[in-house]
Amino acid sequence: LHPLRLALFLAVTLPMLVLLHKYGGFRHTVALRDRIADAFVAILVAAVAATAVLFIFGIVTAEMPLREVIGKIAVQVVPASLGASLARAQLGPSLLEEGDIPEPGYTGELFLMVVGALFLSVNIAPTEEVVLIAYKMHPWQEIALVVVTLALMHAFVYEFEFRGSHSPEPGAGFVSIFFRYAIVGYVLVMLVNLYILWTFGRTDGAGFSETLSAVVVLS
Image (cartoon, rainbow, N blue to C red; front, side, top):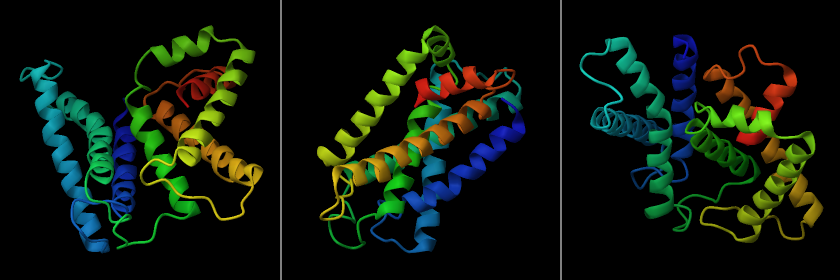
């Protein structure tokens, strides 16, 4: 993992955490100053947890160069900090439910999709399975995967109405909701996954079709 790509990855994470804590931080407040503090708390908790887990499983050792140790921990800080924030938003008292802040609108929903994609994909993108599965799939299988994914996105987020999900505008039709949320959300997820694959060097030396296949599989 190139140091500059890792640094950019970490730099992108902080503002995302600040925005995410608008919908469920560690404290009962939505003030910008407190959300920034919550973001740093999440990063600190993630760094401590990642360090402990990596040492327990022997992924990092005292004999390793400091640069390598920091790199391994930094990679885990992103999903761990997002996971801590998402867990707090889902399992703890919700400011949304208590009426302290309005529920996320259209842009807020798209942002939460991006955060969810980043959290899930970071744990999968570094593995070989994504490239291997993409290599074995035929174009028609990839198209079928896209269709199934879009259907699941629409069903899980807007039909089952999980906690924190946004209720569509009254009177909005199926086609409008599907294109504005599922289609746009899927495109954003693909862009996020393309960035993550690039960050971990999975697009280096790959052609357009290979990269697109990997993005579809990861999405």
